[in-house]
Amino acid sequence: MTVPDNSLLEADFELGFTYTRSPGIIIGKFLAALKQQKIYGIRANDGSVLFPPTEYDPRTAESLDDFVPLSDRGRLLYWTWIDQPRDHHQMSQSFAFAMIQLDGADVPFLHRMLADSPEHLSSGMAVKVQWAEERRGAITDIHGFVSATGG
Amino acid sequence: MREVAIVAYAQSPQVRQEKILNEVEMLMPVIEAALTEAAMTMNDIDFVCSGSCDYIAGGAFSFVGAVDALGATPSKMESHVEMDAAWALYESWLKIQAGEISSALIYGFGKSSVGDLPDVMSQQCDPYYLAPLWPDSISMAGLQASALLATGRYTERDFAEVVVDSRRKAKANPAAQLSGDREVEALLTAPYIASPLRRHDCCPITDGVSVLIITDKSALPKTTKKPVYIRGIDHRMEAHQLGIRTLSESGSTTQALAQAKLQAGIEQFDIAELYAPFSPQTLILKDALGLDDQVDINPSGGPLAGHIMMSAGLDRFGMSFRALQKDEVTTALAHATSGPCLQHNMVAILEAG
Image (tube, rainbow over all chains, first blue to last red; front, side, top):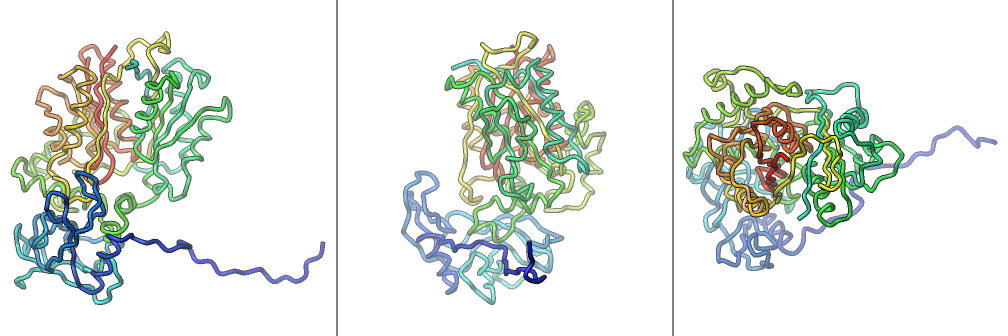
């Protein structure tokens, strides 16, 4: 057996999905709007407004499509203070994971609450969105929430 | 309904890090121990079902490798759930009810020390709204604990008392990882890791495996002195998004209990083994199940004393089985959970035969 030369065969390899994934017409519309700094909830069959929008009613499983524009302000309900963020949290300083209810929505959702210390947080305090500087149509286009009164 | 009995249970020590053995090597002696206890061989087993998580091992279809622990022959009908092995037990129970099999060996395993389990668990969340934020399992449990405190039903002192109780009871469980005499006051001086949770409020990272064998009543091994019958079993799931649920309660647990009671016709339990990997969840589950102080909760120490990810639910059945071998214990409630913040819950009612 002859070896033509001693060079190695090489090929580029990138670890990752070899396909793109569509988030679908409901979640996709919501995420695309976030990129434009617009926030939508969706109306459930009992009239309540869910945020973030779900494709199906969590109680009846029926399809939902009635988008409701929401403001970028809401209330902090409760939180867990993360004194030492993990690498994956991508936060350079302490923060809270919090349940926040946007004005006009009937349910809270999980996101980051940004503050200097947990002493600055109180249940029911008014909060507003802090947008990410670069937005790409993802839930992280909302960088987090900060006090709406600057406290 | 066919009468289905647990006839054997074996568990490895619940260690912080198993440095030498791989999953197959950990499983082999435990499978052997369970078969020996049941006085059965693999020839007597109709079906094998396992529960594990490929994300923990970090390799797709890694569960297939674990089948090596069963041996090449005799070949077996086999299945797997990417869930806690309590759901592998449920699948096996259904197969017996369907009349397809009359015996099953169920195993679960998890070697959580090889990765960062709280981060791994964050990737079980939905990929659009939650996973990009990497809400780790401890943080999500911290949110749930905050929701519970906000109701005013419990305090951080109550969380610490759950831990003291667990450590004390675990002294009688040689497989426990954490046990001993702790003081509530001392625990309350520890720093938060995800407020209001302190490190001791969280289940320990654990490497381990467990194996349980069930049979139809008609196939009970002759040597089984005290089979433990599954008189009722049901599981219910809630919405994934935390905001859609009431985190301070566990409605799906209450629903599953109601169905299990209907099947069993049993209303009172001597003991309850609850899969509550974080101390406040013990209190949420206790309320959801309506358990009073007469019920001995987690006599094994429960998941706070040792928590084999993907098998800790099956272990609640196994620990109940062991407790029911004692004369003074005749009925038990076994609970298993799956998903963040008690999203999905199973309740079974067990009775000593």
